[in-house]
Length: 387
Image (cartoon, rainbow, N blue to C red; front, side):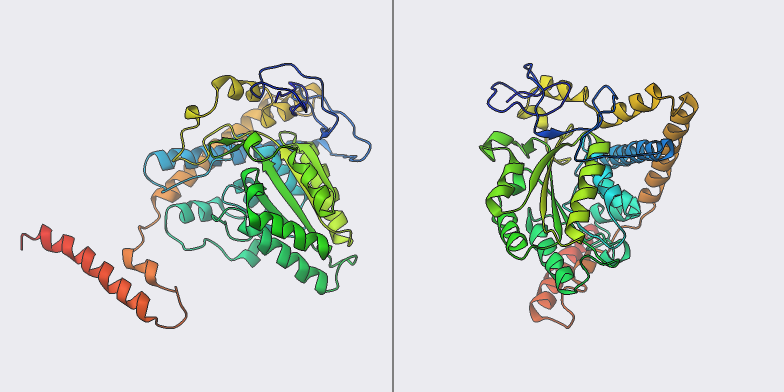
């Protein structure tokens, strides 16, 4: 499979490592902003943005990346137990996140930090979760942003069920209409849960958008071991529209997701969006991507960086100057410093707290396990006292 440098899409039928060979532009990819920062039009996805809105999207991208990099650093230093980086996927998340209406409900995986930012969720909630300080992290109803889901693909069933509930509320097509959006990766498309959610959503014409961030690697397995056809084409077999968007193009991700959500809210049913992007970092901080992918592949995708193309667009169209870019960088640096300070100030959880709130009422098995673990912890104090 090859990657076209201008389009960032695979060339069907081509061979060789992704990003290493030349290929003609792919007509199946929806793109509104090229990697060089040139605005292009698409007849089905018109998008009008003011200079202020474009600068806002640029700020979102920079802030989200800086938060992500700080969290990775905190994990490497032992302050977080784990982190799933979104490096390279900022445009897919910010673009789709800014397309959401207030009433829409988001069902994320464990990597949607950029969507969380767009929904107004404090990143400190994310850090507390991965620091082991909270069992879930936040109230889903507070920002219409559901809990992070570690079990691959299970959130798609939750989202399909929620969307069917919206449908039964009888609000579709009204000013109170809402939709659900489920995020998942390319590897999750091999899970039964995802395919079952496609069946339910299609048969019941549920108001849901399935947003697949195809970052090319399901941990250490490449895309060709997940599917023999482009992922967006799977939707056709379930009876609803599927399309592929340049996942490194924040404009296209915004326009495509906005239209799909509007269709869902008006009663037109589900849509599958495949955001074709690339995971530039590790799958999580426990992963070493250098063991299974080529450095040249990563370098080719750096030329399609989602932040740099918006910056190029702003500069070419004289919508921003050096002072603006400097201010955004300074703001991101300040925010990261505050985030680190607040993370380090978070209290360590009490070990036995993990047994609290497992059940609403006392449970004999939990009580037994708690007593066993308490005795285990006490044994260290006994050894340390010299007894």
